[in-house]
Image (cartoon, rainbow, N blue to C red):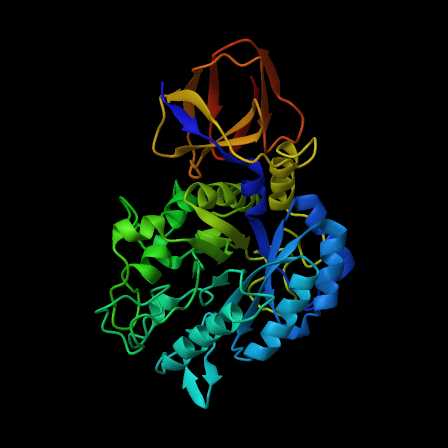
Length: 432
């Protein structure tokens, strides 16, 4: 058997984020601290929108270790203000990145006297993002931090401002010059509840995370996904961007994704809501998204119609999604977070695998691996799989992320196990 290269367990945990106003818009710092610890959230995507105070973010970091990406938010164009807040977060050791304006297709920006985004020219958006990049990279405190592209929706450009690129290549025929640099990471809002999907389907989060998917196999629907924002633009003039081969290796993050309870004619129950969210983080990481931010930690009380996205309700009670995520993050981190310098490989084969079954190999310490298997049969059904290990483990502990954090079954000195998978992750802790 060929060994599978393990990824760092700590890198997967660090990818798990949410959107939150932390202490504004109906949220409180005290509750946010509690929710962060319970769900295992490692980072937050936010900005200066809504007068979020950087001092409160630093308090949250000190209490939980959470990190922050800091952006211009919806309609924002004040680069000096963003830089000032980012410097404060960097000084406190809790900044991971800076981000451009959020969804310019929904919230236009005004920059240097010019309106941009929505149905206007997108030149102003492009100049704002380019100037933000220059400001960050010329700042002694911030120059080593990555810049995230505009908050999703580069595919909505009305004219070809080149925002489908991190750096505009030669002969791209854009209104901004070749060589213009916008970001270090592409940034999408690949919600897996897109209306064109037409209903609850299997492999829902896997398809939404696929960086080269144009249309859903056997369905014909589309997501507002990576391909539609960096490959072939979904709106405007349907401008070309990166090739399929280039998309695979393009550095990427997701700063919004999720689903509301009651989507697809009530097919998304609270249980399915929770199961898809846990699967989402796995699908995103397996498809090389460095960071993924769920929309949203706790439902905001000032957004009519968006009251069932969250891990926590407006009444500050946990939904099943919070419990399921708690189970997964705590199973993976029960004896404390550890970070090895480099990972090794581990050989295994999954027999009887179907297209809805996915796996992720993580390593925590020398000789300690985790295989996470998740099946996306959200419309029903099961897969009976056989896993054969190249090297016989000393112990295998099996956990079910829906049932809790307790060991479901312990095995010793066996190189074959059989599992029934359905619609949520199962975790194997392997000690060699």
